[in-house]
Length: 309
Length: 300
Image 1 (cartoon, rainbow over the protein chains, first blue to last red):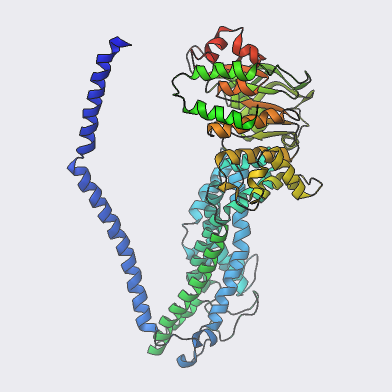
Image 2: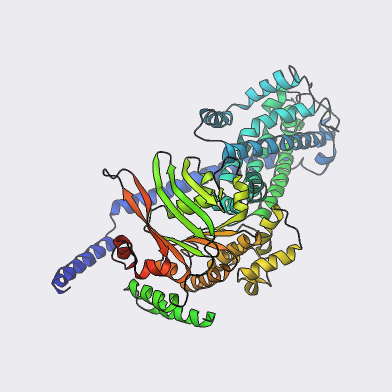
């Protein structure tokens, strides 16, 4: 309509000058603040990387001359030149295997309940949630005491066997697995569930055939984190029986007398002779190798199931 | 009308300056709807009697009474927030998934109360399929997307045949027959939506509900889905929610017009049905002035 035309022109001119002002005139302070923030981020990252690099260099300098294949083939020994880590590696593998067997089904089950079935408005479900998050922050030695009191002795009374170590570490990493699995399940778009239910699938069929397969990558990521933590834990294992110096490989979850890599390293470090210190440093390299091997497998597994939405 | 001609026409329409939405609507009614007198039986599929839905204390729709007929396409139109989606989600009990949703009134399906105490919502959804606003294929292969329903329902027969039949019915077979093992996410949006329709057909439902099935699609894909809907009504009863009045005019036999009602203090809003009649009457000679204002583009 014609009587609006001059006003429209005026508005257009005004908008253009505002636009040009906005586009060309970024306040100096904003630019500086942006750069400072960027620099801080880089600084934080480099601090972490330098710390890690120093640690690795130190370990490699101390341990590389002693590191070799024989560390994987020889057992623990009272003579440092004959000592290896095979029994500790087997101990760790047995323990971690048990941890996976216990904490994956229980952790994923708990996550499914909390995400798919629990009514979040009920106080008991909220209580469970808060408690799981708190449990993730409990010091590991507390789990060690729990394991000693309830698994090694007490109600379960299993004794100092590999299974006791597995159960204790499984309790320790269970909150991590639950939290990660919940995140993974929550990341599945609701439209997938709706699509499945609309076809006449039951809630369980929907979870079993749509939600769970799609959340495997996220769940595996959580399990990787959990295993990495369990692999490095020393304190709780010392309490539930891995402290003993052993010179044989565990052969079943019920082997009485076992050790794990971090415990063996700790054990060697606490001896007087210099040869043992070198051996302990080499042991750290062995542990890194085991860790990388297990994580690589898990990452390969995750990538196999990766799905982009 | 052949598909090519229809597509060409649609392409042309898409190129025209989109200043006047009504022009398309008029043509939609005059050219495409005249030759399609309401058909099908008057056998009732759904009977809604004073149906109301609340989310917690907030009403979503109130006092909905209407009947949906067999082998008809029934469109629900109305402005945003008038409860069209809520209403259609009642029809296969998808609203059960919202814990706070409460349904009052009566909803009969072939004379059976869908909200009766002995009715299993899973069985309801087997008979009444649903296609959603945003295409939601499963993160699996095209084949597995179709086969999922028949597998969980333990349908008898050769799975390859079931899949092919469903994809043919969904007008997708020719485009995907050479890559059935490819991930469904590689399909275009329109193909994904036809896959979802085919997936729904694969479990041999009796009725198909479509909640704005074309709102995320371009005009060409929309045209294909509309053609598909027209074809599918030979075998199925279809209820479709749409924002697009031309679409309602093109595909539906019956149209219900809903509006938003407000309480005096504007705290609560809910949808109510204004008029429910044959589509042609709703678009050419509505009996309520509010319907006329809406379909002629004066409001909304």
